[in-house]
Amino acid sequence: MTRPLVSILIPAYNAETTVAETLKSAVAQTWPKKEIIVIDDGSKDRTLVVASRFESREVRVVTQLNQGAAAARNLACSLCQGDYIQWLDADDLLAPDKIAQQINALGGVESKRTLLSGAWGSFVGRPDRAKFRPSSLWADARPVDWLLRKLEEDLFMQTGTWLVSRELTEAAGPWDTRLLSDDDGEYFCRVLLASDRIQFVPEARAFYRTSGAAGLSYVGQSDKKIDALFLSIQLHIQYIRSLEESERVRAACLLFLQRWFICFYPERLDLVEQAEELAAQLGGHLESPRLSWKYAWIQKLFGWQSAKRTQLFYNECKSSIRSSWDAALLRLKI
Image (cartoon, rainbow, N blue to C red; front, side):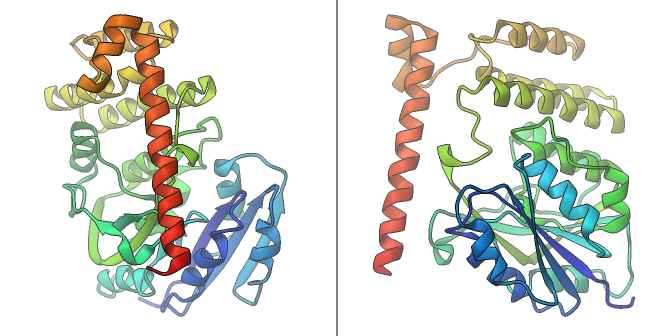
């Protein structure tokens, strides 16, 4: 196999504090044939200024009016020339040999329908403290078995872990701009559908910066994000059933739907009704969600909505405190 060109594609929005570190990790990739494309999605801060400092023969920076991460990714993909695509968010990092490890794992035989994955660790402000927690997705697998594990166990693989051939990228189609949340989960489902197999490369490491309630993936009480989440859930179920229509798949889909039911219940009666109809199609039914003991007493005294709002507020505060503490430690270099 000749050395393929790898395109590292980075959508960026209001990422002035992290995009430089992300770009450094992209430039530092030991794989020699690479191009790096940054799409500034109409940032209101200095993201474009910071990213432009890295422009070179292999780094290109483009700006567009704000249209969302999916649209930025689609533009980056339309501009790239790579044989393989490395997606990378503007606050995440790659180990220097991440791409090289995955290309080398092919063993000199280019398999354009093999989807390459790798290990990932989560961190808040300090990548040296990233925690790598293996799951059942960290394995070679057939697409249907991989998706089954994802739905049954409520797991995910971080965006930066994947290395996707041009053939798989074109087969999957563009990112869905309707999805304001979980656009990556839905997109990689389509990549999986087009693949022959997933090959896990444990030495290929990515670093995922968690941002909690401040992140784009946080749903909260946004109706638009809740609608997008429900659409993503429907598509996940549709995709896995297109691979295998069986009792085990229907059971996994029902469990998946039950787990996320709390995001719509009880405020969005329209989605509650649709979810119950979908559960019936899967041969089951949905139970009323249960809150943890910390919020159950609020539910009994003040109702479901008050308990749910309290839970969301608590999680947002916890996330903010954790981020501030880690940032303080980083400044002190502790």
